[in-house]
Image 1 (cartoon, rainbow, N blue to C red):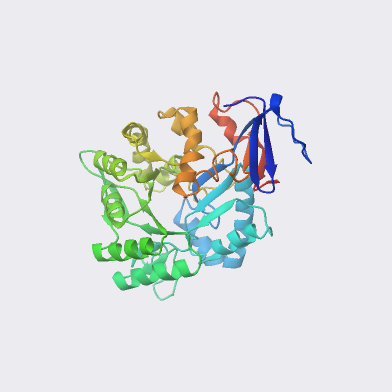
Image 2: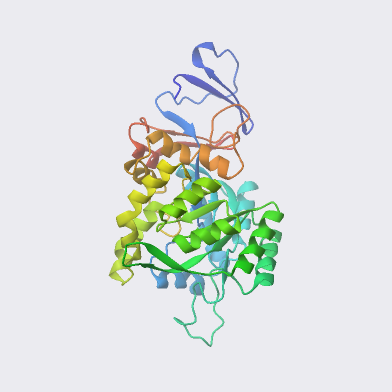
Length: 388
């Protein structure tokens, strides 16, 4: 942390950071943030701008069955604006949940200055296998051709084709779901069912990496995490039921972990009342798992899964858990700045305030190194040199 600095911005780039006492240049405009703490724009590595909370199956189904994709895209514009106002100037949006390639359109509208929003990295539809994702014909009229939350594949050829289609439509990342059906064994360990065959995973990984794209996996327990790492993922999402072997594997393979903590807590009580108790179980052990991963050197990146919970809830809530479970406030902030930039291959361009970085800058009242909750009260936002 440096005090009494002058940040010179030219266009959308930080030109210099200079102690105020030695700053001699002329500027067209001066913005006085003397009474604030200034930080790089934050990075949320797991969002869903096209989703508006899905605690229950009905909430999810209502969006896919009663809202058109254009309507959901209009709502996504609101979500993107909220994210920017929350101080998250970059997001990785991990699938549209049945809204096809609308995330590419939201990204395009932001880049063309049609709507305000963060810098976006998108994954379009995500991939899973037959019968392993909502909307399930078991729960609805099987005579109807229901929309699906993901792109369904069956076999290696279809898996490879799905990757090609999504990249052709503008996917920056390819997302897969490697496990489902979570349960807690008698010894307290967590497990799940596998979604893909090895041939399918090999095809997805080969096509993704061969196209110079990155692979990300929703993986919660041992089985899914092992399969995801085998496929060549760059990051594991959630990992609520991760065991010691997985922690060791992630550290050895330099795979990022995006734990999305608040949503697990947020969902646990409502879902328990509906008869699904796994989130409640996960929360009982999540803190210890997080501490083990931190101590083992796993690269932990900030991500929320917002959209899975309401966009009107805090987007910076996960910081509290991270600090409570062992991170310093500096480490927590770095998970949403420097580490997030590394994940996105944007090191030196975002997540920092230094020469040649994009001018993504936020400000809060008070010192977040003393109170991490202040990141829930961002007072000022500049993204790409524009004050929002």
